[in-house]
View 1: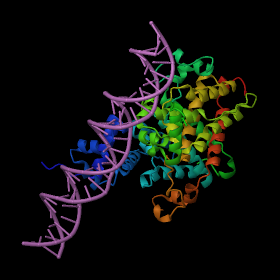
View 2: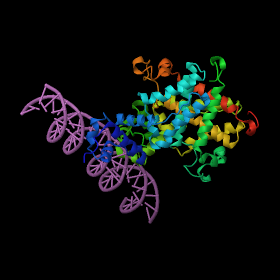
View 3: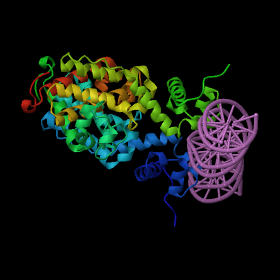
View 4: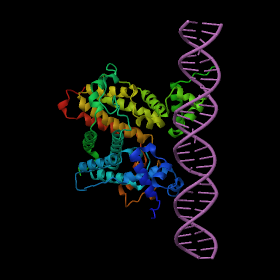
Length: 216
Length: 216
DNA sequence: AGGCTTGCACGTACGGCGTACGTGCGTCAA
DNA sequence: TTGACGCACGTACGCCGTACGTGCAAGCCT
């Protein structure tokens, strides 16, 4: 039985699989080769080096997000939908999320979401400068949110993923943290993300009108 | 001449130095030991393992930020100042920034900024739930901004750190990106950051008043 | 003073990593 | 038929983190 020939696509897929199963630290060329049942050096016929492979992983994950953009919807709805679509990454590939947001991608995979977002913002009446600024702000917020959600960025919660133990934090040094400990140690990612998105949309909706000609 | 004795503090300092000089990839226990003029294994008398050392680096950097909080100022000014103070990390230790935002810190170093921020928001009249939510939103935005600023997160710009070459991006596939290429490829980090902060402050200032008793 | 514990610097060694390089085998063009 | 070429693979090198053992100096108890 002839096994499927090796290919960049198969290698990237195996890498994603491995990352999601065992975390990014488990990724090594040797391990991927073993998972694919091939020799280590065979990988290098399809991928120049490990770094390029990880870029491939990031691009693959990024290009899997599904934008269902309805050009007739109000621009605020379109922005909301695009933000949520991006966040899908964290659900579909939680342990790869760090890779996606921490690599400079110079391919079309990274450009497509930008194109969509800019088109939406322009259709909302923002001029170029504001559209770019607003986009950057959204990206920063989304990236930061995803990082917290997948648990790689500091939650700054007193205790990790459990109700706070009052002994962990000195109430005299940190009265607020102590008092709000139950709130800090629990976290509804969906609600928190949407809360921020709504706030951002509201904020940009009232941007100085001088540069806007309408609301759609 | 007796050389200064080895200590966790000195090791962490050497690590920070190394990271800022040659980047995080250059960090290895062997390299740090060499820089300190000691044997590799001597480090392990003061630091349990490399991961803990990197946590120490993150904490040290984080605890160096200087908050000059004026309790008499308007809460919007205090929030602005705290956000900017946090951003100082990116200037003081650009190549360590990724470490700071990508590690779960369970020490007081990470709790202090949270305490300050919560106190400020509470004094602005937000109840606990809103204070935590707003804080999380700010953190997400700041983290995302810092990552872009230090160049580790995708800029989604067509070309890296240079004016866009029109050949790089297909104008029919990406008309908006193509048209806004000059704007996308240049970036005033200071202005962009402040733009976002102002927008966020404005947005939270008009949060439903039901939970607020005043504006300071 | 003499012995004993303790702390710390250090060398050696092991398993794993990325990857440069050479080799052999199949396929396809001339 | 023969040559070139693509691709899978083994070996080997120089890194890495760190477990483990050794030796030396300072402090402590009698």
